[in-house]
Amino acid sequence: MTTREKIPEERSVTIRQEVLRVLEDAELTVGELSKIIGKSEQELYDHLAHLRGAKSLIIIPAQCLACGFIFRNREKVKKPGKCPKCKDTHISQPMFTAARR
Ligand SMILES: [Zn+2]
Image (cartoon, rainbow, N blue to C red; front, side, top):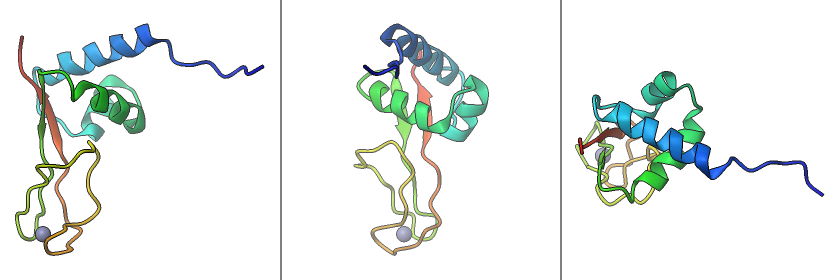
């Protein structure tokens, strides 16, 4: 028997709706979103990964601040560690926003 409870799906859906609602009015990094929603960045990454399937979520990709390389095809929503082109680690945070329905 395990006492560990899963997050109810209903609650996750509510948080995702809240995330989209906040993003409809702003362009934010996960850190900023975390302060507004009051959830950890790790939890928000999970919700954002789910929301990537939603048409309304828009991800502004991370960019290398040294050479300008844009991480367009990145599968994950997290900030990349270093630039594959110039190996620099000064990389801008990806930003998230949402289209109004
Ligand atoms: Zn670079």
